[in-house]
Length: 443
Ligand SMILES: [Zn+2]
Figure 1 (cartoon, helix red, strand yellow):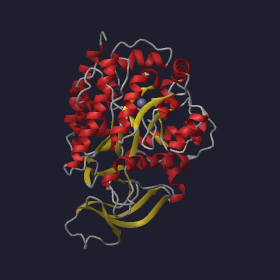
Figure 2 (cartoon, rainbow, N blue to C red):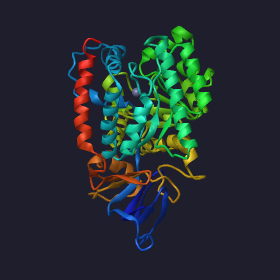
Figure 3 (tube, rainbow, N blue to C red):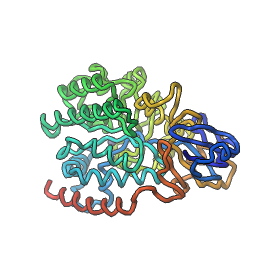
Figure 4 (cartoon, protein in one colour):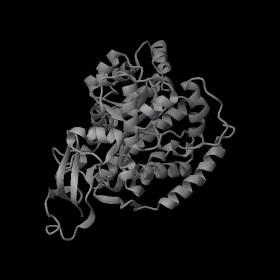
């Protein structure tokens, strides 16, 4: 049991800041009120003063890309997005083995916790080591104590056997999670069904993924129309928009996560909204890959935010989303993007519903809800209230003021010190980064 004392509670939706209160938590939030220390004498003191908020959610990332930082491999210059994939990312993912994957996941997961991110929605590729890869990722999540969703990004680009292995890994992992639950466990990690992108997933493989969605009750997680090429290819080869390809097979549901979606047509957005699916917006990655700007965000019902593998700092990502939108002269303000950041919790609820009390919610500091929390050592230079919370996050607050982090009721970082072996994780990551870069040579 843990106890925060005299903390101002932050609500993201609707934005709000409370007077100083105590919060006592076990597996769920037990009580919020004044002077709770006497009532919970055995509770571990988790911190006092400052602000306490729900943990942040990164709704689309690639842990396998963690060791690409500062990559020292001869990479041919790319003229477009397809060449970026060919020259860099597909060479990199083919070079991943399970030790490299484990080191990547631990390094980026640790970074996420230090940024106040308590849930990571991952989209994994590693065609040379598919079988068991999602279990390696799950073990890294459990080791750090971070929550999330995992899937394998199935593709036809490594032949039919690679595609079959991708589908099989998604199915195997969903069953692993089911059996953990059946034996009374509450895994920190849930399963989604992954596909790489429309232009590398042919009809037969897409049908197999749709079958996996139905068989497991999970949602599809796939890149769609990240680059214009993907949208054009779909209409050229199949005579259909990408979202319609998914929807005709019944693969688009309210657990579906569509990555990027820059080049979706208005009718595709309507279909996504009708199915209540999520659009994962990755502003910084789109800028880096020069694929364009998603000006249609306000037309979507469920926009969530992700880093697409570019670190794990969701406050930084939020700022990129805000400022890129302002530059594009869009109609949204920081508060609209705060709603997107908070919406990652709705995504979690749809996957973790079995673990929650009736009517419970992620991202809401109320009794009975999950204990994914961030304690912020923030001493604001201007008044901080619900009405200007989004402004503080866009123009001031950064991960520098993350003091402590709890996930699922357990402290993971306390007073800026990790409760896991960070030095060992970083040392191992540097060793595996060298191996990864060496493996990429000649591929
Ligand atoms: Zn992605």
